Amino acid sequence: TKLSRKGEWGFFNSGMDARLVETLRMESLLRNAIANNELQLYYQPIIDAKNSELVKVEALIRWNSPVLGWVSPAIFIPLAEQSELIIDIGSWVLKEAVEQASRWKKLDVNAPVISINVSVKQFVSREFEQLLFTTLEAHTVQTNQIELELTETLFANDQGELSSLLKRLYEAGFGLSLDDFGTGYSSLSYLSKFNLTTVKIDRSFISGLEIDDRSHSLVRAIIAMGHSLGLKVVAEGVETSAQSRILIAEECDYLQGYLFGKPAPSDTFFQLD
Ligand code: C2E
Ligand code: CA
Ligand code: CA
Ligand code: CA
Image 1 (cartoon, rainbow, N blue to C red):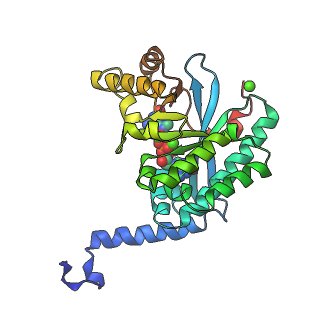
Image 2: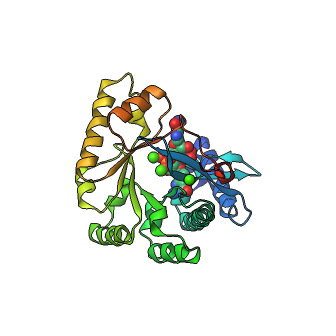
Image 3: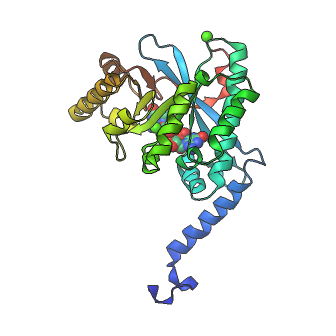
């Protein structure tokens, strides 16, 4: 169909039409997912490259819809980010992860830090900072047990406000991690300008590490730069022992990927040692 009948259904071709209907349906199902207990957090190990000890876990959301089956967060998180839905989901993730941190701490004083993905919209929302502190307080969890994973799109926001928020969280003792480093408009200047503790090298640079000299050079440069700025460096998506060996030789601090463990429910971590 041509674009001439704007405002009518004819505006869409049938492909767009079907996709729109599907998206709207998914969104309405997602709206009820929290109340219906369909969401769950999985945790993926992050190990210390020096001694292979489990030091951190990344919380990753899972949605098992009775109608749609398992839906990837790579699909439903971007959908939720188009509305205020991401605020509710983000608050649920925060509460759930902090409760888990509290339970693990009671079992083991060396319980891993929990790293939580925070959407930009959630992070810059007025309620976020308050909610963060009250949630930790309610479960007697210390700030150094929690890390927040942020993405570069964050820096499109008012940098003055952002800078002071990051500074307050940094000084309070939170880990502050820049996720997916190297994919977007990664500017090196952001790493030095804002209070961060960690940079995560995107999986796309790790997957070709053993065969691609360019990836190797880039990874080496990111690690060196991160260290010179006082940041810890995490490599994500480590799948082979060859990749792991290179990263250890390059003095990457932490490793995450299927080689060490896939994301799994919290009870699989019951014995932490
Ligand atoms: P991300 O934050 O970059 O998370 C890493 C993704 O890589 C996860 O996918 C993880 O399961 C996957 N992964 C880890 N190790 C390997 C590996 O060795 N090989 C491969 N091929 N993949 C690996 P997942 O769980 O499907 O999450 C996708 C994205 O959804 C996340 O990317 C993040 O952007 C978003 N997401 C997940 N959970 C949350 C959440 O609680 N809140 C928000 N705002 N976003 C979330
Ligand atoms: Ca332990
Ligand atoms: Ca992440
Ligand atoms: Ca990532």
